[in-house]
Amino acid sequence: MRRTSILDGISVEVLQARLAALQQAYLDLMAGGKVASASYTQGDGARTVTYTQANIADLTQAILSLQTQIDGLTGQCINRRAPMRPVF
Image (cartoon, rainbow, N blue to C red; front, side):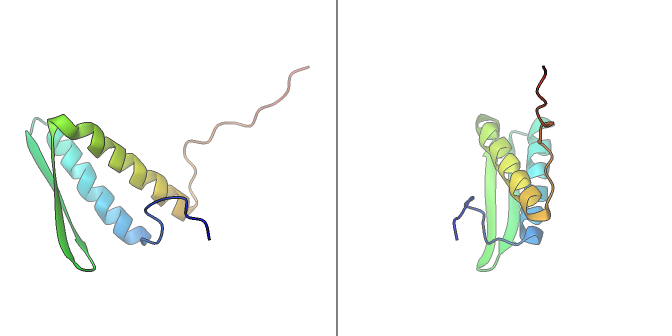
């Protein structure tokens, strides 16, 4: 089986919980917070990731990556373009 993402094998519920934590951290940073933390529980314990204004691009990329993975697992395809139609 070919892997298409480093997030393959993680359940949708776990991905959604992490997505919610990262989105809250993003909102906290955008509201003027200098530091935001996202905490989640994994099988082998709790993890905390801290973001600052300097690495908000990393936070944004992590959110987009999780959203893409969740969409793929749930069968949603949001960024799909319309089919091309030839014009004669």
